[in-house]
Image 1 (cartoon, rainbow, N blue to C red):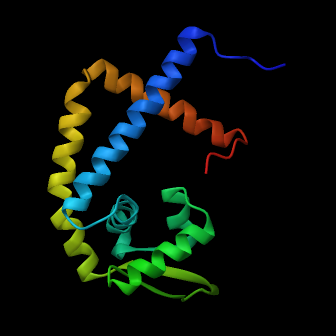
Image 2: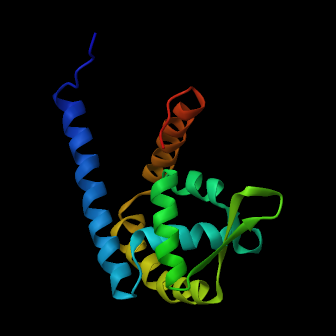
Image 3: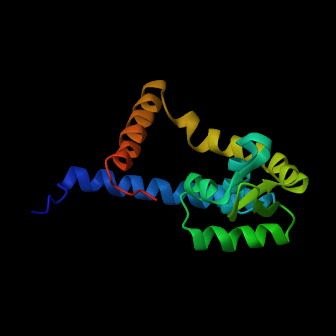
Length: 153
């Protein structure tokens, strides 16, 4: 039996969708001013946080929640631009290691200050501490659904 959304639930869901769309559009535009796409930025951030700026492609894909095909195509474009380097994994000939290049780090360091200021202005500064805690709690519970067999990526 389908558990349809009541009016309040539907309004909440639509508010979330509109918020996500507006934030994505604003963030995409802000990053474009620094010459980087949102998908590029997601990859660069994930790699910059990794030890030695490198991750196996499958682990990077899991972090950014992309399928193998999308990741492979996007990494090829980023490698052409000199932002990342792909090399065979030393411990598995089938695996690929993705490494942040010096140029990739430079692009990230140039874009990060404006990106953080935009995120702060449009999102963080609009929340109370209690709302931030509630959002993190909700995000944790939604992410936990994956542990229960619901594939979120």
